[in-house]
Amino acid sequence: MRDSDLDEIRDLALFRDMDSEHFQNLMRGAYHQTFPPQVTLIEEGQQADFLHVITEGAVEMFARWNDRETTMAIVRPVSTFILAACINDAPYLMSARTLMPSRIVMIPGADLRKVFASDPIFAQAIVRELATCYRSVVRHAKGLKLRASKERLAAYLIRHAGPTTGVARFQLPIEKRLLASYLGMTPENLSRALRLLRDEGVAVDGLRVEVRDLAKLAAIARPNPLMDGAESCGEPDSNSHIRARIGSR
Amino acid sequence: MRDSDLDEIRDLALFRDMDSEHFQNLMRGAYHQTFPPQVTLIEEGQQADFLHVITEGAVEMFARWNDRETTMAIVRPVSTFILAACINDAPYLMSARTLMPSRIVMIPGADLRKVFASDPIFAQAIVRELATCYRSVVRHAKGLKLRASKERLAAYLIRHAGPTTGVARFQLPIEKRLLASYLGMTPENLSRALRLLRDEGVAVDGLRVEVRDLAKLAAIARPNPLMDGAESCGEPDSNSHIRARIGSR
DNA sequence: CGAACCCTTGACTCCGCTCAACCACGGTGG
DNA sequence: CCACCGTGGTTGAGCGGAGTCAAGGGTTCG
Image (tube, rainbow over the protein chains, first blue to last red):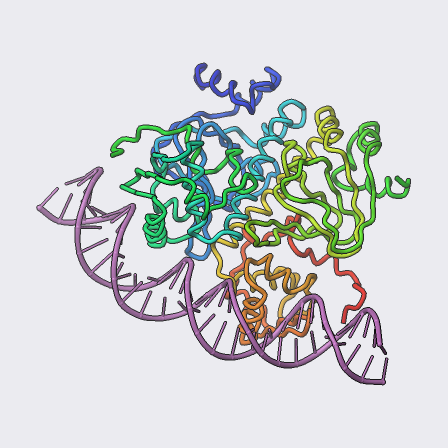
C-alpha cells in the first residue's frame, strides 16, 4: 500500500487515535484497491473475511430474497461497512457493489479482531462506529413502518435540502431507481409520488430538485431528529459529497 | 442491590469475563428494580442515562411518529437494551415498556462508558452484543422490504415452530396485536393472514398454534438464515423462554 | 445507428388499511 | 348472581395506496 494512502487512512476517525504499532499491524495485511463501477464486492452469505473502508466513490449495500432485491444503504467516504459481521466473525447479511469508481481498503477480519482486543482506544472507536450504524438502521426501519411512501419521500427530500429555509435547490445523489428501492417502493411509484409532490411545490428535472416551500413539505414529512437525524452511515446521501459526476446535466 | 442479584448479573455473557473491580464499579451506581406490567421505562427522545438489562419478564421496544406507533422488538431475559444510545451518549430512538412484571438492572451510562474505556474484555463483550443487535435490526428491515405480510407471518411461525419436522405445536409468546405491529401490519390484517394460512395447514386457537405441514409454510416463507437467523436480541420470541404465564389456556 | 437503460405514464389488480359491527372473555360492582 | 364494561380478536364492506404489466420517450454508449 502506498504511503500516501496510509496517511489518509490513518487520519480517519476510526484509526486516528489508536496506537501506532497497532495501526501498522492492521495495515500490514490490508489492501487498498480501486474498483470500477458495478463491481460486486461482497455477496451476502459469505463469511466476513475483511472489514471494508471506502475512501473514494460510493457503494450500495443491498439484500436479496426470492428474486427480489432492495437497497439497504449507500455508503460514502469515509466510512466502514460490514463491521458487525467482521466483529462477530459471521456471514454478511448484505451484499455490496460499487456505484462508481471507488477505492476500498480491505482489512483482514482476523487482524481486526486481534487489534481490537488489545487496543482499548481502537475498540472505543469501533464501538462508536457500530452504534452509529445501528441507530441508522433503526431509523430506516422506523421510517418504513411508520411513514407512508409519500411521507418517506418528503422526509428524504427535506434531509437533502440542507438547513435552508424557504427555497432549496440540490441534486439527487443517486439514480431514482436506487432511491426508490432505498425508500421501499417501485420506480414507477417514486415517479408518481414525485408528481404528487408537485402540488407541494417540488419541481424535478432529471436529478435536479427544487423545493419551493420547505414548510409545505415538512407538513407532510413531519421530520423528527429521532427518525431523520443525520448521524451518517448509510444514508444516501450526506450532501457534503456533491460530486461532479461525468455526464451530470 | 442484593448479593444474589449481583451474582446473577455477573453471570451474564456481557459481564462474565470482565475484571472484578470494574464490575464493582459498574454495579456501585446501578439499580435492580421490579416493575409491574405496562410501565413505560424509556421514552424516545430522552437522553440515554442508563443502560438497561432485563433479568426477568418481557419488555416491548416501540417507536412513535405522528400518532402512529409500532413495536420494533420484544426483549427477553437476559439481554440489554438501548446499548447504542448509551455508548454514543445520544437520545433514545425507541421507547420501552414492560409487558409483564419485569426486573430491570439500570446501569448509569457514564459508568458504562468509563469502564468500557478501561476494560478491553468488557469492551469486547459490548461490541459483540451491539453487533448482534445491529444484525437483528438489519434482518427486521430486510423482512419488511423484501417479504409481503403473509410471507413475514409464515416466516415468523416457522422460526417459532422450532427445529421440528412435520407437525409443530407451540404458543404465541405475545398478544396478536403486538405481533401484528411487530410484523408491520394491522391486527385485522394479521387475523386475515392467519385465516389464509389455514389452507396451508395452520390451525390457531387463541395463542395456541398448530402447524401441520412445515414444508408448505416454508414454501411461502422461504426461510433463510440471512433473514431468519436467530442470533437473538429483539426477536419476539426465542422459544427458549416458554414461560407459564398466569392464565395461559 | 441501434441497443440498452432509465424514467415516465396509463390501465388494471390487489394487498392492506379504515371503519364499523360483533363476539368472547374477564373483572367489577350492584 | 347477574348486568355492565373494557379489551382483544374476528369479520365484513369499501376504499385507496402501491405493485404489475405494458408501452413510449429520452440518453448514453458501443
